[in-house]
Length: 189
Image 1 (cartoon, rainbow, N blue to C red):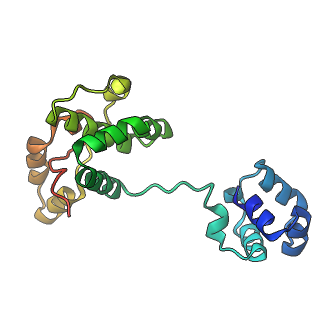
Image 2: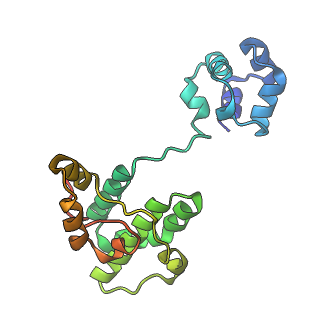
Image 3: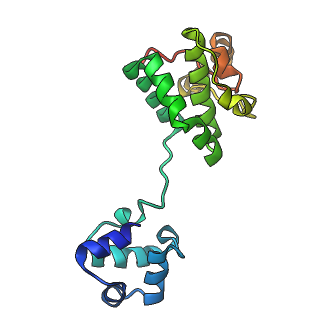
């Protein structure tokens, strides 16, 4: 926990932090013990603690706040990783990391299914068997079809759904199985 580390680094007790910051000692103790989550505290409490400890408010809440990039950013990062690592190293790294299951269990279904589709696609492209560990997730399908942002922008600009229809025809089957439209995973800059 960040706050305990900061207290230790500064040689400060919880009592001193409470007195100096003006935050009730019980609140400080609850935060330090994990009974209370600092990200659930008021902005005023976080501000007082951060000021007393000489750090930013973001530093105090960084442990408890999980950053979730946009899906477009996630897709771009995955495609860049494939390009940088190569198909086989990417497959090995992804399957050994259990990232697909971690994302799925976190409820990040779109990201999990995209990563699984990428692994399945690369397995097919390289004549590797599918990893049976994800057969349960492989049966999952998003309720709503996810189109790339560029396709949605073209539909809006043209006032037509024709770009969606065309992208569905060109979609990679492993992605489409999960209702994710993806046609190009290798042409990244």
